[in-house]
Amino acid sequence: MIAVVQRVTRASVVAGEHRAAIGAGLCVLLGVEVGDGEGEAEWVAAKLARLRIFRDDEDRMNRSVQDIDGSVLLVSQFTLAGDCSRGNRPSFVGAAEPEIGERLYERVAEHLRTTHGLPVGTGLFGAMMQVELVNDGPVTIIVQREARRHVGT
Picture (cartoon, rainbow, N blue to C red):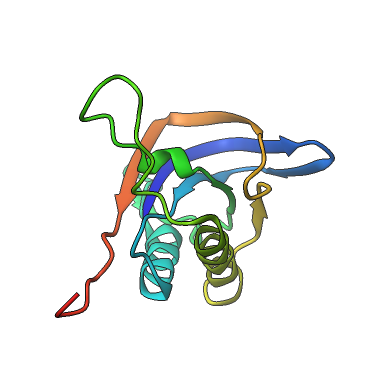
């Protein structure tokens, strides 16, 4: 699972009639990869909730989105799993099948809301979307958790 995390002062997503917007917090582009499961979804949600990339009183990155009472805008983006190592057109064979990707994307959003108590806006899975944000800093972090493989597989 790959998350591109941006610290924002505001962010929004539009997909047709679907709209979501947040103020200060995190704009997260999330890509689900082949082999990802519930464990990766829970780990990524916990990491996002606790990631200390907001300024404290001494202007150090020492506070989490929870600490600042911020929000998360979670947007699915399968293209994060694109492999550009060969040729000039990315291969997306590493992206999870849509049914699995959507389930785990929704699971990350659910964990952020219920386990970590964060307000979460979401994009529309599988849709063409326009994302607008003001990156604060700029601060952009990549959070990645490779799927844990079972012995013998």
